[in-house]
Image 1 (cartoon, rainbow, N blue to C red):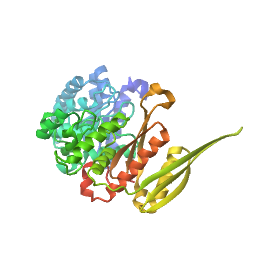
Image 2: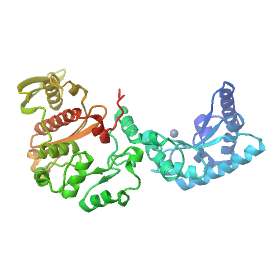
Image 3: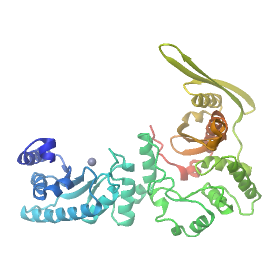
Image 4: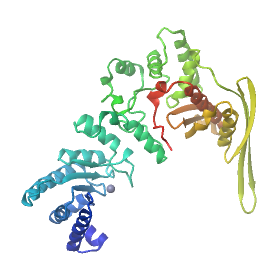
Length: 443
Ligand SMILES: [Zn+2]
């Protein structure tokens, strides 16, 4: 169908085109990886002809024959069967043609049936030895096979050598780095590299994993550069707080008087609508404050926002102006900034006030901003929870704000993000290593 309806040539002409193109490239000293587009659908429709196309590439000198499931509709079992048949055919052809080197066999899958990774693994079981995929599975429609799952599957579970161990350990970083470049929020639930891939919540669950990680972890997270994540929630008791402290390298003993205070504060804040599961930086600051180990580098004194909508017949001009007052190093600082939206105006004014004291603030930027209405039955008087994610290009951290006023909640979260970033910037890199998520050459 693709030859006659898409390319609009005869079956013989198509074979000649394949052979000419591959031969031309080989004659010019190029390596040729021949991608057999629509391979599986073509093979199912007309296997003898489909094999003739591969044969044309083979005799013209292609070094790799890659079987593509371009529409993504073929299920793993079928892929495995067809790849095995091609593998047998290839051996027969090679001996007939007396080739001294057998071309490699590749697999290229798409995720339209939700089985791109499974299909690629099935092909490898049937002797494919080149696997196509993309980082985080990014690709047209439903994406390509996700290398961040494929590589550890192949290497850690099937024993194939894909990467040197030290490179495998950068997989999580790489996944975040690519998501940052393409400006898509990372998938927290992605296999292996997701932020929640090794997250544990609930007392018994956490104490078990602390005793023996294999109770709830299929591999050691550090093998692919990820980390165990202990999630905090109202159901959490002392063991969660202790595990969390350990993951931040904070010294805390079970009988520490601060323990009771931390648990009490968490419960109280949660009853007000705070939730620390997605705001780990805020939780860390809370813990450090209870232990007397956190000295705020600035204090909020207040803010004011005005917002204008000036409509004329021809256009609509909107703009926000924010004024903030903060105390820094014994001085009161007042700054004003203007922006399209009120939250960005607040963010800008706060930066202006702080950057003269802490130039590092220039490297911070917001990577995500989420608003959730808590008690929606209260209508416009409902409480608002704002989650902000900040980054300095190397780490990402999340902070929270809660208020009946969306600007106040946003301001709290943005200011906490800056406070956390400043606090972290005083510490050596080794301490924050476990939450390092993107390479420093982020441009
Ligand atoms: Zn493709």
